[in-house]
Image (cartoon, rainbow over all chains, first blue to last red; front, side, top):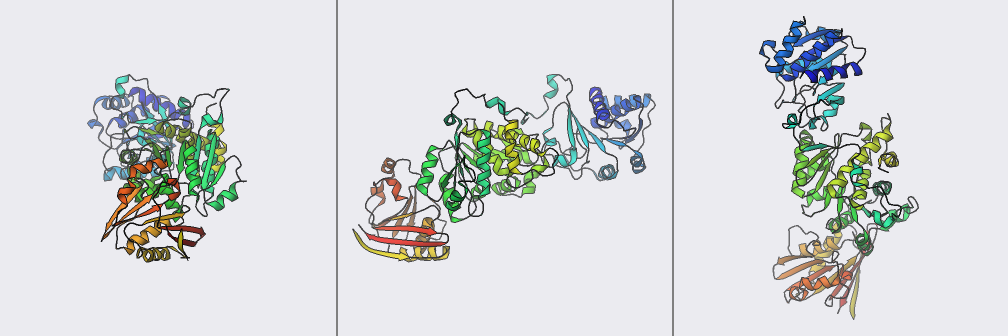
Length: 461
Length: 143
């Protein structure tokens, strides 16, 4: 606890160097104990610190009680919640040490009122370990949560900080990696693997001098009903930029003719011609089915045939909506739903998916025996065996049309280059998110085409 | 040898279903009807119309997974085959076509081209050509 508090104070000094007047709001558990230590450190550094305890400090136990005693020995005063609003109004920075990671029920009414006061005050908030009120597993507020500018989390990333609506509450998340013995990790849920930035290099070996395009996989993108030629085009471009040797698009005959000169590197095929489609499928290493597929007779006819392809399959967009209507089992497939599509597949609302994204992705992966990419803030990748990975990269600027088509192309490309389905999905989401970060560079909005143009910057050499 | 040729131009899915129901009246045990046309031309829709015309009210889905979907109807068994996923014409032998085609059953076969000439002779061939929403059905009897 001592180390956690000190590490938090280091972050406080770095992030808020001008803060001179602190209000530290402490709860009655270990999170409160961290607050006492931060208060102690701040006071020792010469800052003006007001400490507000929302529960009786005499009720603290263990290390938290020791931290409180140390604060008192140093001459620190402990205020109760009366006058909290006035104190907050005077603060440069609020330290949230009310509720920690153990919260598994709705925030109590009186505490909720105090959290609202913290949110209402002008000064930014630094949350210790997790914003109070946020569920550490699901990333959802338990009735209410503190909206922090920065969250400094201890020991290990909590999966709830990386997904769901967590980003709305945590602000910037910083990991204060404490030098802790391995035993301390025992009670931390090992099922969610935070993906590192260079994860693609695990599976994408450097190319040999003699590498031939035939070694790099042939992706067949199928989609683009009337009025939706852009979706398969983006998926195809993304697959090419990710390193596929050959990319074909089977689409509506009109589009195949019109787009042939638009992206010359792609082989455009009349997707209404069954013999042509079957021949292409026979030569492909992976099929990406769904971008702009639509809901016409053609869409149905193509979906019915291709979803049963013996090739590895990446299923997205309208391809997933059809799956919700027509349960079927197969293997070697990757599904890439957003929360709405995931909800349709599970027969629940998207809000319910968002309430527990980990449960949703695990259920989908198990039910369909598929690798499932659940898109959204903190994209999750689930494997049929229950493993889950979290992508901690990305930016709200990605919330734009075509972004899912780009991801489909990236993941299909990696699968076609020989990566196993779970590996292709894990590497794909990280490449996609990091390319978007590189493309956004402070922009409010980043277009899918621009993200694709930045893939080269994040791919291993 | 061709006995007759009919041409129909249904517009829209309801018209295609109605045409299917009308064609169903001609179905007799022992017949093999092939349906050709592009993806999305309306072959499965026409089959659905035929099955409805014969009194089947359940869901008609594409049988491409198992290649054949069988409907036991009043006095007639309909086998709906979709050969699109046929990897090799030789796989047809495993379907036991001789057993499927009996005096009280008909075969409706989509993608007959993929059988590589291994199908029994058809009694009726339906070709569906399409341009946008317009459909032209050419029905040839014979064989």
